[in-house]
Length: 270
Image (cartoon, rainbow, N blue to C red):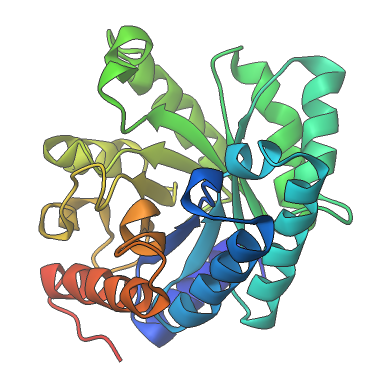
């Protein structure tokens, strides 16, 4: 199955629309061994309550080669739980460099199942990523309206709308239903979610910002399709460090976020 098919199936089977961000912060631990053990334990504990995982590359890159090895271990553990893997790297470049990024992270030995992509070097730079995703049953999630307050500096003035138009064009190439071309729309913009859902009819939406960034599950219903699919909501710090390094608290936070999303959509978790 493709990434989108797996994500939708997991959403419907487990009644979860939650994406687990795994962002190990080195200053939270006394050793690398503790960082590794805690990150993997959080993944194992939260797996029953999440639709996918989203490792943020920066935190693994900051740890050097050891961190990249840990990222592969995290991905391997996710696969043991049959969890789709959305790599949050926000890659974007021109020509052969974009093609190399796509090869690295959407195909081959180190690939995830999906990748966040930056479109601000021009729409032609999306082509290698979209082609690789389609070829390998993956997906791309393109930045449209990010969760940070400063996004308006470059995403205002109709820029986000222009990106959405291009993603809709790309999505339509795959026929009806959700496509392999998704969009990142911050959960911190709740009053705009109905607009973006309508503007991106074929796009699965990734909504970062739940928890530590201030977004609330109750405000996010407009991002979903009528059957409760079509979007996943990401929480990272609010789960992994819900109460310091307490894994039981991380599990409880994941279950709570899942249940809050289901309650907002008037659905029942398992």
